[in-house]
Length: 366
Ligand SMILES: *Cc1c(COP(=O)(O)O)cnc(C)c1O
Image (cartoon, rainbow, N blue to C red; front, side):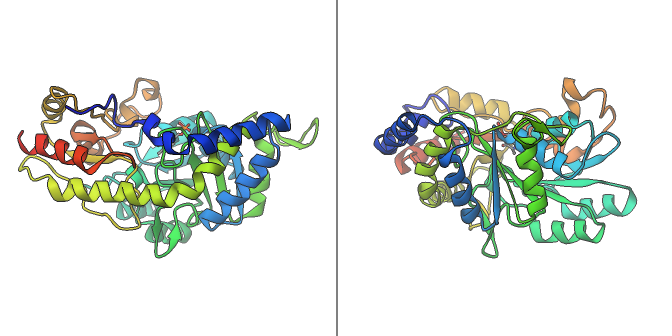
């Protein structure tokens, strides 16, 4: 039997660094400074360096990061944003929050990531005001090609890196390719705080400046509200201090995730199951997602022996109840089919080889 309550075990994840975390939290407590202070400033510099981008502006969560990035690009009512519909609604929520309209591109049948050929076809045929590239499950999209296509049509690119902290293509990290990029530090992400958190990174200082204003009421200076659309969306000192303890561990955690994903893919051999096949630096294995047309039956087969699994994500954005008014007759067969077939297996750095092998064994016996 496996002693796992869900596909993540955050207790096991933070246990080895508990002492360091306590010290970081203690440091904030004694400082008496809790919002937008020295820890936030230091984390922003460290995370920008890590991503290989000049500017990082931390915010309250990943969805806010997307929303404020859109606002910084002047995306609002009357504007259209191209994205995918199989990535859990986050980008759609941000697009709707700024009053713009989502438009959905089909995903590739092999990786379930945005299809660059589809993007090119859409950009050639109609006006689009921004493109959100989601690096789903920890795997980077065809970023270079997508950025080139978008540039050709003068469409700004937002990378959604909430599942891809540290992933790299051609030695360049996720978040350093587009005009602006968004991260979430939700506890289960590859770099996760002990609560909510998020960040925007960019090489363009005017965009960074705007996000910095938006996150604090649109202020140009204290109590001077300059930018309409301002919000309160800040990372607090406690979470920044915690993230500073975790960031130096990220590469190590990512390589262990990658190792687990490769072990699953090498071990799982079943005629009804498709496994992920990319296990290089471009994949930080945020989620290990397999596919089968009998997903619910496999989920049940695993649950019978206490193996947790999950579905990322069961409903395409355009079919969500909250979207009926904006995307009534979208037809994306690859996306729709994937939502019925995907199944996420446990994958976090502290999962042992023995546990992975036990899960593989149960799957192969299905
Ligand atoms: C988690 C996630 C977000 C949203 O982050 P929150 O911090 O939960 O708001 C956005 N995009 C993707 C792809 C995510 O996985």
